[in-house]
Length: 249
Image 1 (cartoon, one colour):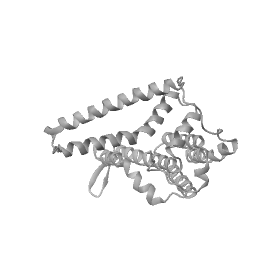
Image 2 (cartoon, one colour):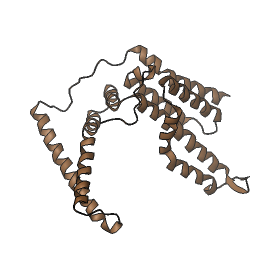
Image 3 (cartoon, helix red, strand yellow):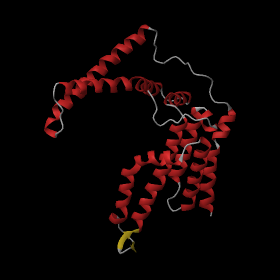
Image 4 (cartoon, one colour):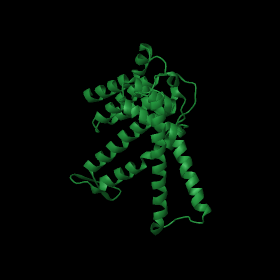
């Protein structure tokens, strides 16, 4: 399965092992989330760190901003908060806005945007397969990594099955478009589920016949060296320094 979010570039960030990037992004996100919403300077510093990593990874700003629109539903929710909040009010352009709602909206937009951008950078610099390898090296439960592995391998197969079923339905002159015609769509989903379940049973039996004992064979290289852990620590350490400096100031 192709990772539509991965950018095949040559950069220092791309060359890092997946597990160090996963840990760095996770720690950065945690620091962003626990930062008090009133520390505006800290969030500006986090944005600068994201920009530096994007430049090192050769990920265009336009590419990031375009895909960051996935958070628009949360932004729309944030827009409502200043009007729906209670407590102290401020006047702006003839409108009465809640101070608490403004802080809540800022909190959602700032932390959500930084988290989305960090995740997009991780996806842009790491293939789906490498992400699963990184989770496996980080001792993520086997059942989770195996489910993700099979999802990566068979999602294209399921999408192709769904496409062929739709073409067959159209060839028979039936193209449901309205709510009262949803039965055909539901029947198709049910048939696709049964096909997927039967395929999973066959794959599992085939794996057992080849010696599967609850864990996939390890075919990846050695884990990340200490040098890469040190390099990847630059992002969470810098963000922690920004947070501490902002709190002390």
